[in-house]
Length: 261
View 1: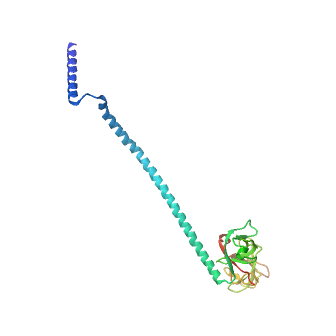
View 2: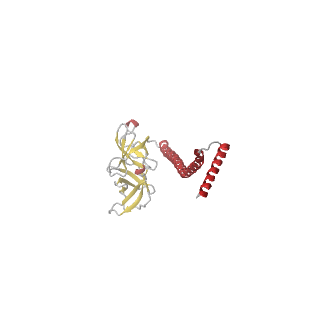
View 3: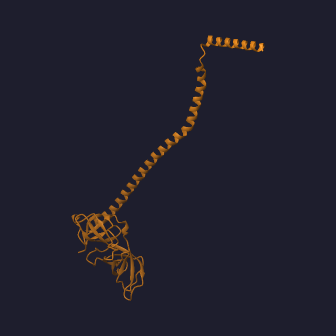
């Protein structure tokens, strides 16, 4: 028991000498300074771990924002391209209409279609020119492809046009190849009927019809339609179905002509 006390005493003396020597050479012992280094190391490692976790998230967020910016720029470029294409197509249409103006003495004005009318009957369109633009009732309306219809109502700044597919429309036409004459009438379903062609005459599908000018309204030579099919008729006349050369669903600009006098 005594030996253990002596040993403990010697250890205490030894530790005291060590501390006295350390303080004499290094200064007073500061426990906080001893703990500072492990805390600093732990903080540094935590910061590295935080950056490792949040770094990819920040990069993803920045990349997403950049992608959104690029998508917006792409949409803007596409819109600009579409607008430019629309201008090019409109310029082509107007250039072709200008050719009609320079080659047609009956030319009155060029107009834009602003409405396809209300309801199914009658089949009409509304154009943005009226009496102020020199338009009168029964004037002829056409586009680059061919006959569109005739003016049935005139206001100061607008006019209503009866399409050739309406059941109330009729025009004198002739077959371009054989020069046979007949009357074209609308059916109300997007097609027309060629009337008063004798069963003795040979008529072929695909034949182009043009205005004859014999009705006193439409100038001669305007393309009207193409014979679509020939149905069984009566004993005297054939039943001939005609598809108009003008697609009334795609009308944008038209030319208005004076009626034939």
